Length: 117
Image (cartoon, rainbow, N blue to C red):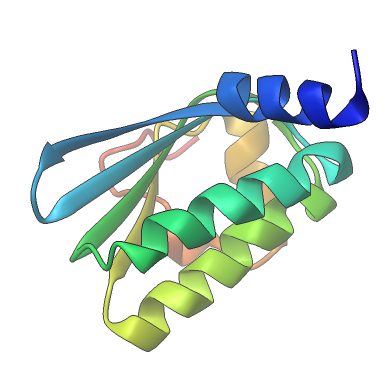
């Protein structure tokens, strides 16, 4: 399998997007978000922002691990969302993911509905 094919498969496995409401765009990430996944994650979040939703929700329920390199696309997406007037929020983050987001200064984007951890 070529590197390009592996990247496509990983991209497909990395997330699925749902649009349950016209104003809300949900991006579901899964697996380990680390340096290896950062490029794919960034590409998907940029594509979601190009749709200009009123709210971009990133569902992290299936993310097992978040590294500092993996958090960078979230930071950039949050900044891009703010710049275009889109509300950005992260939901269903596990304890390790919440801790890394706090460490990276992304805590304000964690949904209030999630447990405080």
